[in-house]
Length: 76
Image 1 (cartoon, one colour):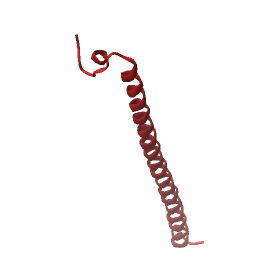
Image 2 (cartoon, rainbow, N blue to C red):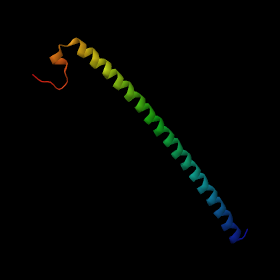
Image 3 (cartoon, rainbow, N blue to C red):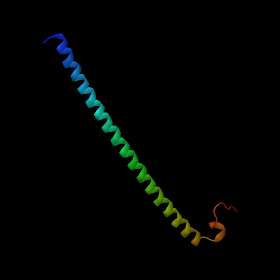
């Protein structure tokens, strides 16, 4: 095998390996983006649930306490 053909073979191997690494990186980045989007969706849902539960708790608290204690921001 001549030096030129060996160089060509090594170059082809290198390009193939580099291509595989790029594919792996692309796949990893796609997976990470999907994971991040999923986390954002979960955080949004949980935040909405928390907000709703806080409203329920506030309504219950305000119905139990005397009005001057229940008003937010009012200090005696």
